[in-house]
Image (cartoon, rainbow, N blue to C red; front, side):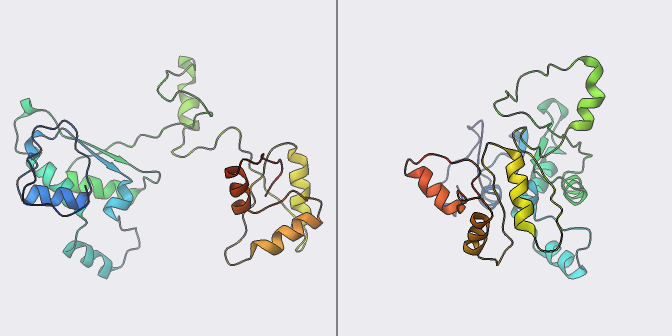
Length: 234
């Protein structure tokens, strides 16, 4: 839970898995309700957001403020690994799993500093739609180098095509019309820059030979109402 702990909160020693916000865990640790010595695995989902990792160019003021006011997640990691360092080897090793789509050097440095350990980075290769992520790979043993080179933390579905348009002057609408025409069947999602109204863009696309163009809001409302999905929509 994310709320403040009440006076009658039970000890968590009898539970196998505990899911909580960092601030709630800090309260449980302070009150002695979380048995630090019993924890075997700590998982931080969206670790960069939980820790509020400072970047390479953080100012001295930002660093001093973070030192005075550490994030609750950082306090939890520090408390658990401090407790783990004093328990006997026979009780097992505390493992830390930090999940994030952006595992950069600042996040790795912070996790290593909090845990006092050297941590490995694991990247998951992109999978085609409908593929069983847990299924063993069908690639031959000799293709491990190729698989490692193509592994990405964030992948694009095989059904998504990326096109780079070049055009003369401001004639982007004509270039977009040609690209959508060459793509053939299927729906296209066109992004409009922030601050630019969608209405004029739709009128321009329709004048350029894309009468089925509609806003994403209208498209979703039509789908929710049971309407069919049109091809080539924007």
